[in-house]
Image 1: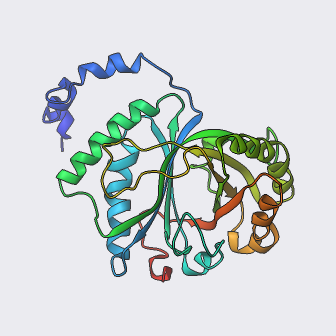
Image 2: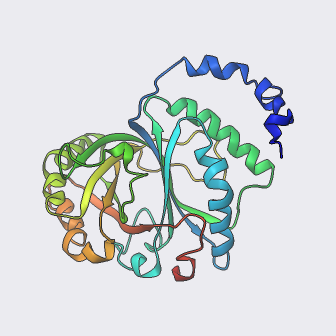
Length: 294
């Protein structure tokens, strides 16, 4: 049996008819194309009660690909989930990020090639308008914490050994902890970042199941974003940390993460942890964990 391509049925796709394919070769010769995660999309979402299964299938079967991985310069992605027992480990109880702090049971993380943020944003705004117009956006969900972010630092537990940050969304890590820290000014954020990078994170990583931590700062969303995604808060005063774990977060929470908020608050930098939230990876193509969200 012939394939469509062999029989000529797919020849239109190669000719560029209707897709301006002739410009792709020109674009490929321009601009940065390294492997560093210069930018990230970090999005924490709560499906509305009763829509958990439908939301999971829409995201995994359609949106993860059409609304993310198929787009230029978004080169790695991974989904994570917080079952009810993981949600109950979160703190602080009064969070500036999630209200209640247990909101946002699904998390998606994506890397964007360094220096390609503007190019990617032009495409992502356009494709999301198209998806919305075509009825391919699931409405029964709430964006709890969604932001594009610029990479600030990566700190490794084992130095040069082990996976790098650009491997992190493909390496089979057993868990992820999201930490969001706010300070009172941009100047204090710079001080906080230096303290994290040179003192706090190396100490916290030593002997822990966390192999690396990436630190990002949020960037404002474009004015023509979709209306269901609220504008980013804390652009000048917030850092988002992603802790990649080699163990289930339930096994190490009390020893390694329960006290980190107090350590940040006690550093004398006017900083406060606004969210400390553990997740485990989803199993793509399945509804595993969906019945454990409530």
